[in-house]
Length: 184
Image (cartoon, rainbow, N blue to C red; front, side, top):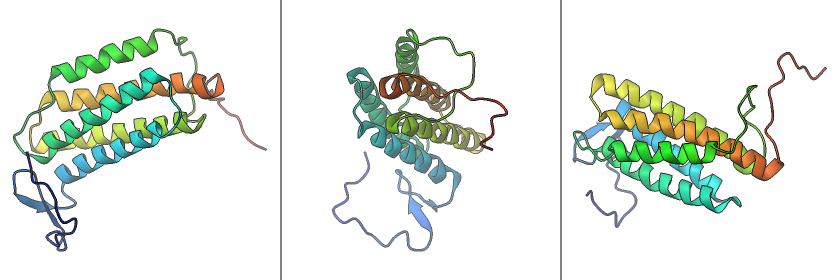
């Protein structure tokens, strides 16, 4: 699928257009490009999480997610191509259930804070939500496989749960929101 680059710069995008996987040319700020670009951004942030010491099961999970996101990106950059199926979504759900099983029930909101990996995971979660919003917008214009949006929705939930696990791994606990707290 696609072409291998032997030369990184091509000059073909200098006028604000880029090529999709099917060879068509579209504006660089088009919704499809924005959607797969946000997915690529998410993948890069997951790479930042992986640069930290992590429990093996989280490292294995996030490594798989990076590969999934390349599959998802390939679907987004090739119109009328489908790669993400229900198996991707159910795999995330099973993983989410496994990680969530030992966590205490949430009674308060938690802040997107903690150690380096925890904070990066919260950043990945918020970028995942943006990728999901972009996919919803794109789906209004050009129908996508329903599993793309479901995958991103489950992934943001999984990243939230992983951030909770990492908070315990790095700091022993989560940072809880204290409504009305001021630093006077």
